[in-house]
Image (cartoon, rainbow, N blue to C red):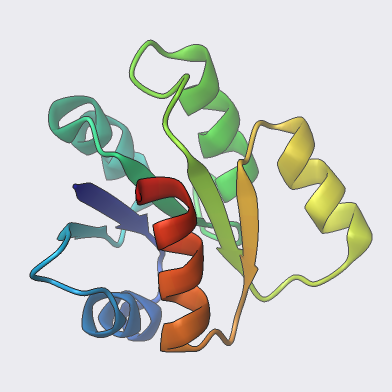
Length: 119
């Protein structure tokens, strides 16, 4: 199974790579949200982990763009963010996010959400 992680923070991308079981999943990290779309179209991942607060294009906009594309319609998209408010969660649902994972996250919390959609 393939997972694409999109976040502008190298620290978060590093944590995602360390936490996700590399023997079970193929992980691709993307630090620039603008570069994410062609990578997603090429890889056709089984799951997308997407940060909300990023420069140039935020996670809400990227999620809504993916949802109207053929490649992103059915793919589970989990928003990974430090935003914990109800408005943020509601907005994530509106743009088509499948789920929501709050930073800081634990390895156990991350793996639970991944296995929820990839088992």
